[in-house]
Amino acid sequence: MPIAHFYVGDDAAKHLCHYFPCSGSAYTIDLEGMVRDVADAAAQYEDEVRLAKQFVEQLRPGRHDIVAQSTTEGYNEEEKNRNWYYALGGYHSWGRGVVHRQGLGREFDCVGCLRRQFAWNGGSQMSRDQMHTTIGRT
Image 1 (tube, helix red, strand yellow):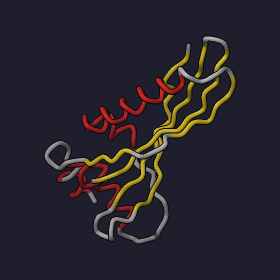
Image 2: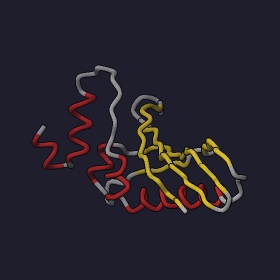
Image 3: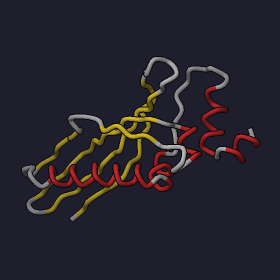
């Protein structure tokens, strides 16, 4: 879909190419690209990371699997980024990770997760896309 790529953006065109055949197969988005390209998404991601770091500071030494207790709703507005508006629109995000604490040191491998939200089919939610990031080693 070279014309869609030109008019709305590469991610929007890739999504169209995947979903038009109606295969029902999962599609992994470029979540890192969205966080890089959309200021609101980046701010939301940084806020999730900040909250995770605060929680990790309270943990005792050992290995801990952690996950956010709730999701955060996000929306890519057309006037802010046309590509991601058409590629994804609304979504819910959350984080999960594995923490290894030894004394005062810690290693935290965080995964940012995203579930897309479609308004055209009654608001159903699908697609758990992930972005792996190591957010703290000391």
